Image (tube, rainbow, N blue to C red):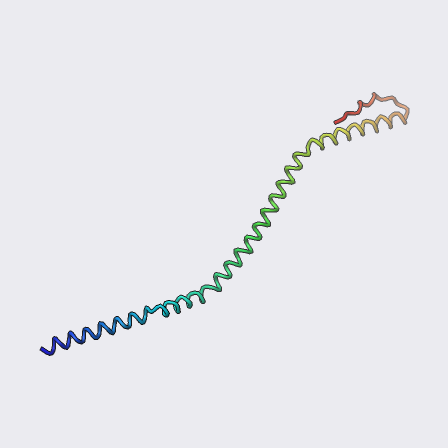
Length: 119
C-alpha cells in the first residue's frame, strides 16, 4: 500500500513543482523583461523607418507644391491668351504703320494703314 501512496505524493510534489516553475516563468516581471528586450531590439529599426517616412513626406510635399505651382502657371498662361492676342494685334498694326512710314519716306504712296484698334 505504500507504493500507490508514494506515487500519489510524488505526483502531487511534481505537480506543485511544475506549477511553481510555470508561475515563475510567466511572472509579470519576466514578461516585462521580455517586452523590454523586444523594444530594445526593434526600436532603432522603427526609429529609422520613421525618419525615412518623414523625409519621404517632405520630398512628397515639395513635389506636390511644385506641381501645384506649375498648374497655376499654366492656368495663368491660358487666362492671359486674351492679352497676347491684343499684343499681337498691336504689333501687326505697328508693323503696318512702320511699312507705311517707310514707303512714305521713299516717295511711294502705299495703301492707307488700318485705323488703330482698341483691343
